[in-house]
Image (cartoon, rainbow, N blue to C red; front, side, top):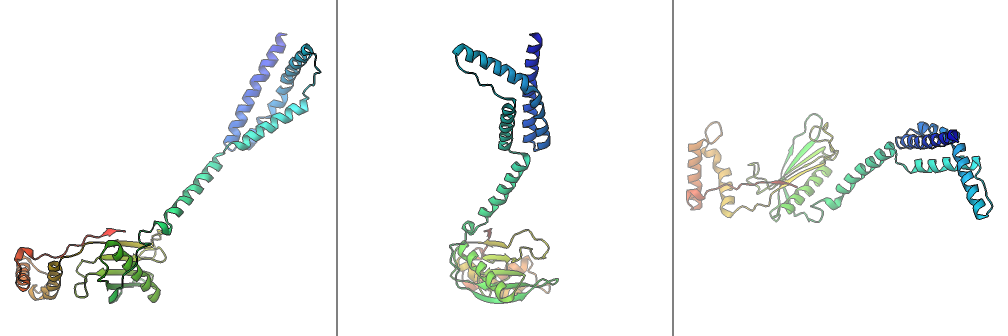
Length: 284
């Protein structure tokens, strides 16, 4: 009797231990270990099966019912099927990593769609090309257009206009880099007061052609609208600066004071009112 109890306890412990190792093996993707861990079940199941059949027979006899024994083959088959189904339901690390990779790859797609483009519904304004510069370097064709668009008054309309110009420049010149500067006027460009600046890299490889980071567009623009005095000041400053600068072409403090005084006199305003527009652009 004592030996039978020990066999029963040993069989139960072995079965639990085998199942635990099998589940761990399957969950870690180690299928061979998981399957080999099931082998002790075939050794321990007989004693457990005998105990179950005896209890079942005893209960059937007490109730006056016919007893049907569970065969060894059926018990082993049911055990393997249940464990294999359980193993199949467990996500292995490979499956988890694959799922994570797929989700990480799918997320940027929705973030980079046209629906995320703040300029998608902005109509570009008419523009005029003021100057064309070929700034190609090291076999990479880089073209620059300086444009004006008087009817573009907002940050987004200026950005959309400059972006449209960049597309046209690239299309007509087959440029590797299309560079657009949307300036205030035809006479004041090149003074660092552009309303919008766009860099377009069709191959997403930057100016050099080697920095392939997936970025095709670099856009920045401002919604600042200069006052009439600022516009007039900038035009007079641009037209008269060379007359007041020294041989080096750079205005020192005294030369700048003389230029400011001349502009104030020309515009019939006080000297403190002479101010150049300050354009602060933001990335789009």
